[in-house]
Image 1 (cartoon, rainbow, N blue to C red):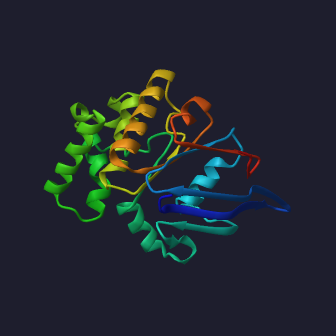
Image 2: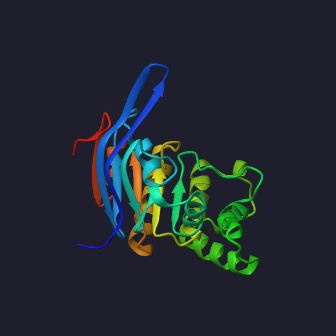
Amino acid sequence: MGSFVLQAKDIRKSYTVGDVTAEVLKGVDIAVEDGEFVAVLGESGSGKSTLLYILAGIDKPTAGSVELLGRDLASVSDEELAAMRRREVSFVYQFDNLVPHLTAYENIILPLRLDGKKEKECRDIALDVCEFLGVGERLNNLPRQLSGGEQQRVALARALATDPKVIFLDEPTGSLDRERGRQVMELLGRINREKGVALVMVTHSAAHAAYASRRVEISDGVVVK
């Protein structure tokens, strides 16, 4: 058994509006080993995206603990969390979340520039990642000039540029048609196998979850399989 990059225990999340409290997560345990590709599968409203945001340190649980890369997120400051997201952890959203007025290249190097890296180093990293993902020909295009699949490849390139140990993915194929979705899933498989990056992906698609090395099914806020 390898070392764990992520361990979460008894994760609970509730929201209260007025006198009504809704329990979204009801005690979820999950662990991810270094280099593992885990798919969290569930229908809309199952709590899978809420769980992902908590695991990535974007949201906080009502109860329970999350240890990411050996650090208890409850004791990590906002500044330390921001540094982790720039250097060790990446997040890919369903709708790519690219900055619309920046070119593909500028989007890819954005976390590197925010971390203080110089232009030449940024460019070398970006070109290497883009060659791996096959997006090198569209670096000067704005997001609106790219297809949905190309936009998601740029988002993956941005996520890979920081050489992270873990990438979290929220329905990365949810906005794509079947063929482009298949292409993105094949890329994720390559990233996992050839780069050794641990991937934690939530999806409602059993076909896409099959690309992962392990599948965790969640329903009504609990792990059912």
